[in-house]
Length: 493
Figure (cartoon, rainbow, N blue to C red):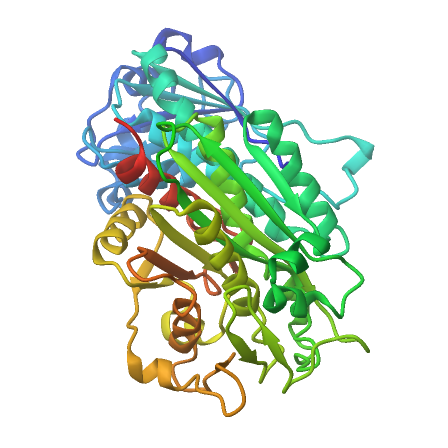
């Protein structure tokens, strides 16, 4: 896994400022009020910070703005960074400020003079998230692996802040794992390799089970198996159980689409941009990263994560448009478009999750449709649900985690678009409302009275430019929101 930066908490000693190396960060309020470290740095630099505070540029600075002074006089540090930070900030403001501090400084030692900042753990979380870089397949310069970033948070209550940061660090590790999985090329992250990485997580307390094609055929997962039958990579379903709650308590089920590469099958995609389809296992990546986060922080909840791992390839054995397959539920599906394969994977795993675990609720995640990107762009995931309480809880958690999510409608009129002449349903409903008809397809495999959310993350799983918390590429969207949901709604208090 791409390593997290080394983040440690130390006692707040402003008198040691002059001898600190690397980058040193001091906090100044938007009103220009300096704490003890700021005043010490101002004296050492012969009033440089006071002149900065009096400048027009500082007056326009907003919360989280970072102003850097290179090679400050009177200090051995290579840079003195001024972080504009009010005394009272929200967790989101603190995370965003931490992300701004670390962006572009990977590999540099940094000491943050946080003083008595109450949200210092959230600041560190933002730094941990934004410090990610996927360089697994780059040749190290001078044949040396770059050392991880070392960050010191100097705080008046260092031990307390360190304790608060520990569960956040676990979540950051889950986010990093999700990003690694989504960023991996398909010749590396095959279905076998994905399953192997999941099996390794038994070392952190997860109960892991891998179902092979023979087991899936015996269960009747004809919809899932039809997607991978054109590939040499075997289809699998991985089951991860975290039993941190009360014995016998029904778990929350997280279900992820894990198409490790999607050519579109016989309904072949255009060549332009097909290389991006290494991220079509994004839903499975988020479920896997979330399960890792829950296990690492020892969440007091029962959660099961299930991911369907397949590869969608064209071959003489591939499913054809017009074929009819039978799902585990028993419903038949006319495959109109083999590029609408994710829903065929999910429908069987969703049914299996409900049959085996009788969960308290089900949340599925998938890079399911291009249509959701047309509707919501890359700012929000599409949220579809049959249960207002669960949905509103998730939307609240996503907002608290600073992860964009927007609820979309469901309805019988959309469901009617899936009617088939020769089977129980078609796997597509035409171009109108494509993300909604995909959700309606999945809803057919949700039992009555089962609380359910479908998250279409096609627009947010991997992006073409850097975000607040991640560089270009995989974002890890969803791990923080799902972890927050578990903490707020499913974890024993």
